[in-house]
Amino acid sequence: MNANTDTRSDLACDVLIIGAGLAGGTLARQLRLEQPDLDIIVIDKVTEFPPGLDESSGEEFTNYANRILKLGPYLRKHHHVCSGTRFFFDSPERDLPIERMSEIGGRRPHPIPTYLIDRPVVERDLCELNRAAGIRVLLGTTVLNCGPDESPAEAITLDGEHGHTVRTSAGTIRCTWLVDAAGEASPVARMLDLVPEEDRNPIAASWGRFEGCQSLDELGDDAWRQRVPHWGRASSMTYFMYRGYWIWLLPLSESQCSIGVVFDRRHTEPSVGTGEELLAFLREHRALRDLLGPEPVVRSFGTRDRLARLATQQFSAQRWFLTGNAGTVLDPMFATSSWLFTENNKLIGEFIKADRAGKQSDLPAYVHHYDIRVRSRYEKLLNTTGHYVFRGSFDAWSAWVALRNRVYYNRIVPDALEDHRILLKFSRTHGTDCSCDATVMGGKLSRLLKSADRLTEEFVELLDRDGVFSARNADTYLDSAEFDQDETLMAKVYEPRDWTLEGPADERSYQIFCRTLVQRLVGMAGAEWDEERFQGVFNPDWDGHQPLTEMLKGVLG
Image (cartoon, rainbow, N blue to C red):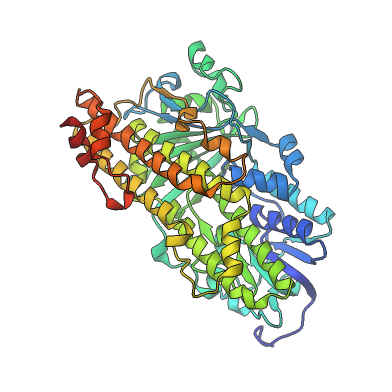
């Protein structure tokens, strides 16, 4: 009988999650803890979780893991507590020893703990924790008809009213709510054609796990090591920044590291198609060559052709959802993966609660607002053509990342810590014909970030014109604590949220950012800084598209 008309099932549950990785595994645990009477099945085609594209966790995931998933003791026992993010910059010849590379990073441990997660270990342990909690976890179980030339529609019947059915190698499973957490192979996204190619950009990555590596704290001279005297640098999430690409370093043990390169093919395309090619490419950089040690061994290798992906719909009033890489993929800097699925998982939980409470008439408004949030979030984080150029300049990146951090602690972290209260309020009180478009759901913030991108790209053009793109890539240190110039933004995440403070804080952040760029240009011109002239010419309205050259001319007179 055709799968679309067959109503028989071998297994039944309330929630079926396709994918037992980090997104699916954490959602299963969240639902079990928040709604313990739900019957949950998790399936995955793998029996062992392979190493993937590694990243640290962000504050959003840390809060989710500690407070909602009750995984704090587990993470502290089994995974490295991260001592913050660290950026290094090199000469165009890529030949600086690490103690001479310009550096952005904190002298002190990060005030909000995050983790360097060994992802396959967490995914394996989540399976066992979920099984112990009464969740049926079926590894080695495939959704049928999901091969490259097959149609998932032959295996999946979406029926929000009577229950979805999914044909698997373990039998046909019927469920009320279906969650696709199967990554980029997402059968639901494929079946419904939810990922248009035009939403993808040509950013790619190759990565591996290498045995025999040196610790960051074993490199450099005494003065360099003493610059970060407490935890040192070895437990940092470390990035090496170059024009057109960047390299991550995530320590997994005393001698094993995850190292990967992420590059924009619009600017560069290194030959890194195998583990040995990646190793050879890394060794072209003196600092990476020193870190890898004399005899590194490639333990695993992975690659991805395109890192940007947005499923145009990720929530449905017909009771199906996407989470994790099934829905949104961006490059791994700033722990975007854990941030994105953390938010989706929370919203899925809220949807199921409302549905179970008999509020079916409210569900379309939930979907409307959730999908606005997803699109807005993606557009704020999507890399422009210029992003991968200015990452390679200490001058350009230090200004841009300082603004990004200030916005992050002013808006993003407080929103996550209160579980997206304002979004849920709109979802519960508005219909689908309200004005909550991108203008309301983060539109002003998105436009601020776009203005910062535009000004940074203009700044890089001026650096290139004068041949000073890499002028401060050596022998310069910036303590990332200086990003929070008035020492209020990190502190305020521990206080009750005051919405009236956030707009003025964004305005101050934008002014600090613009002043930083203009001051640098004035200094390169050999002129004295004039704050009064800057204030006279500076337009605080980032929607006004004021050019950087206009600010510069106003200060130089």
